[in-house]
Structure formats: C-alpha cells, structure tokens
Image 1 (cartoon, rainbow, N blue to C red):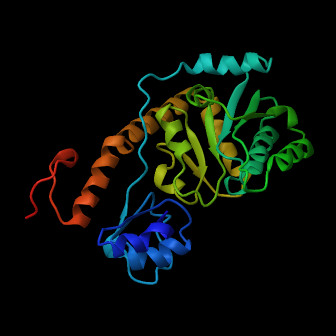
Image 2 (cartoon, rainbow, N blue to C red):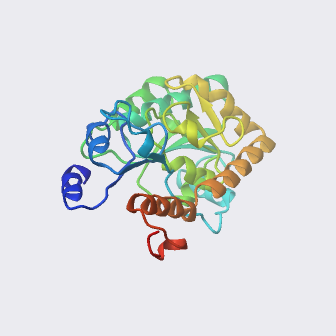
Image 3 (cartoon, one colour):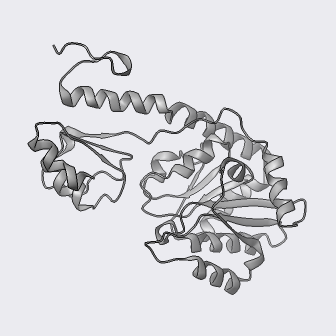
Length: 290
C-alpha cells in the first residue's frame, strides 16, 4: 500500500503516516519511508528501520497493536476437559500450545522439540502439545517436517495438529502455557491474547517478545533455538499452582493496562494531530489551528 500510494500522497500535498509491523530490514521502511513519510509508527522497537537512508529519529514512534479485552473469561477447566474428551485422553492430561501460522520463522518444529525435551526430563508427566494453525499458501509447509520430527523423537502421540479453530479463546484457555519458539517476531498478537486470558506465556528472548513480556513477572523469556530452555519455566508452571496463578494474574493485569484499544486510538490520534499541524479535542473533534 505504501509503495503504491506514498509518492502520490506527497505530490498531492497530503501528509503520510507510515505504519510498519514487519521486517526491520525491509526496503520500504528504510528507503521510501525516510524520504516520503511525515511520520513513521512501528508496532515495536524491534521493527524500527535498521538502515534508514536518512535520519528518522525525529519522526519515529512506537505504538503497540490494540487488543480487544475479553469481558468474560472461559472456564479453564471446562476448556481443558473438552480436549480431553475430544482425543479420549486420560482425565489428568495437561496441555501446552502453539498458536499461529505454520511458517518457518515461528519455528513450529522447535515446538515439537520442546515437548520432547520436557518429556525427557519428566517422562511420566501427562503432557500433550496442541498445534493451532495452518500453513501459509505462499510459503513452504512445515507440517511434514513437524510430523517427521515427532516420529523421530518418539512423541508423535503427544502432538495434536488442531488446524484452524474459532473462536480461539476456549482453545487458549485450555492451555496451561502458550509456547512461542518464534524468532524475528515483530510483536506477536498471540502473546497478548494469551495474557488477557490468563494463559502464561513462555517465549524466546528475541524480536518483539522482549517488549511484550517481563521475564519472571508476566511470563518467561528463554534462549532462542534451544528447546531445552523451555523445560524449567514450563515445569514451574505445570507443577506449582501458586506460580501459575502469580504469573497469569500479573500478565492479565499488565495486558489490560497496556494494550487497550482506547490507548492505541489516543496515540494514533495524537500523531495525526502532530503531522497535520492542528489541535483536536478528545476523539477527533477538530478545532481551529493555532
């Protein structure tokens, strides 16, 4: 969209607010935005342009994505039991999940390896990993590699491919933890959605994950590309009810405070006011320019 309309926008005399939520090395945000945008807003510090051809610090802001806040939380135990019944599993089965597109950057094969690493340490624990997501039509499908790796590691019965399911809230609420092995994640929505549902998150210390989670307070951050790094925090959440409650409560409180729609709208509105050089009352009611 920016590539199509940026030059036309500026030639028309209008102002351009460039939104960026992708690769920090992308051509557009490093070349076109510095030349043509009046202001650049990114969804995280991680995706700010890495090599802009002109200085942009004077016209760069970070605004995290907005999220709807669930008014009623699903009953977690009821949600868990639904999957126990669906797969005819032992009543005491516990679930952890991968939620997102099946693309290499999100490292779905690593999720399989995390399940294996945990079971290597705790072989008798009734853990099952649920994979929610479908492959991208434009990218290689990692599902065959996931199934092959699970078979190779002997955990094929502990991995359930769930495909696309909606609504997602009961699915996330059935999980004792959301595992995020992704790298180069701009600012993952599933992390915040899980936190709002009081599902603790264990994510790689990489990309925008670092901005979403306070390690040991609102979730856990672990070294990327190391499945065994997930084992200790996962064990703490699965085997200590008080720790699970502490993390999940802090995560929800933090997410409710920081990631509301109203705060995002207010932030974007202030940017509009700044770049058009006018003053506005709350929620966009225009007043005369000073």
